[in-house]
Length: 76
Image (cartoon, rainbow, N blue to C red):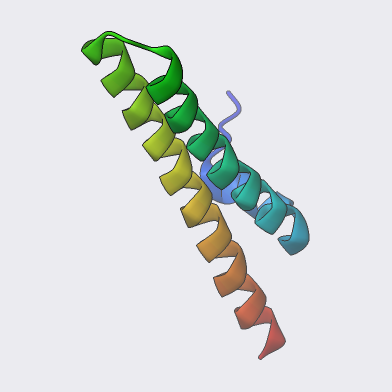
């Protein structure tokens, strides 16, 4: 059985790739939120998509922060 966790995936990516991935996730989450607000009229689907988009943004922020912390650790 193969188990791939976030830490093993993050360790496999070089730092510039992690930063790019994080910023892409931030933009993608923002696009999900804005498009849900513009396209959906009913409250429940709109709220679900807004929460999903916010979750993607948080994930992007975590990836960016983690890449910056790991790059600082290598410079020392």
